[in-house]
Amino acid sequence: MPEFLDADAPDRPGGIGRPWTALRTAIQRPACRRCAHSAGIALPVTCWTTHDRNVCLRHRLWIGDGITNAAEQVDVSRLPDALQAQRHHRNLIARHGRRWVRSAYPDARKMYFTWLQRRADPFDVLDTASRLLANGAGKPPSQDLTLTVVFHPQVVALAGLLAGGEWERRAVATGHVTWLVEQITIRGILLGYIPKERNDPLIQWVEHYFSLHKFAAIHRSRKIYDAFFPRETIPPARQADEADAETRWSPIPPYYRC
Image (cartoon, rainbow, N blue to C red; front, side, top):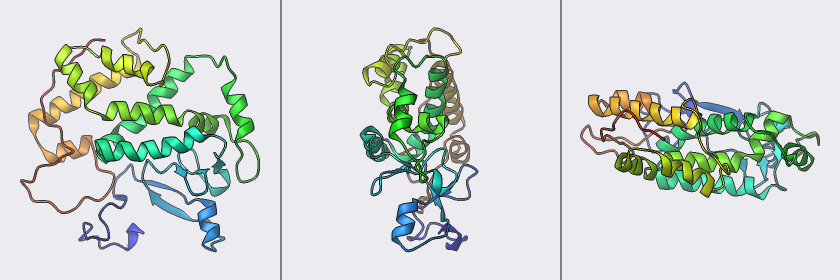
């Protein structure tokens, strides 16, 4: 529990890698109800957690976004893609760095559900999924929670695409984001995706991303950088001149076209 850590030395070995509870975006959620039950705990348990802990793989319960109490946790054992997405999410953090996946994930989620609102549901995905999912009371979850669970694999895939540096390198080299747009279809995130307007959420995200990085590259201030792209967990102690593998200082042109 972070509350019992030494506030004057948060980077002690026992605290490194723990959720950074001082952040405004720090996350508190109910612990997996089956994990608590197996430990002999009958009372509600709330824990500090990180954005990537959405599925308890041991008990196959959805414990992430949209859950406000343990009874709402949804059994996802009949949705293997949701289980695989949890593993994929952890692999993305190991590959790209927690800072970047954490920064991209909420934007990817907001972006994806904006796209969904503009599309119909021709295959009755929500109706089918609601019959496969059940919460602690044996009832189907709400429509919003069903959407969150069913499309979690696509959101994770999109977050990984945005967190990686490949699209950025190609955008710098070519002056446009065509490769990024193509990958959204190639990777099965959203089939047939083509941004048709300047206010498309992806185009707006790219422009905002470049503006932040350009500002950070000009000022080269770690405080500014950490304010734009905060860490999610407590980092180890570091020297003032030590290089940060998760920092991207390169200056970037302010505008890209699709």
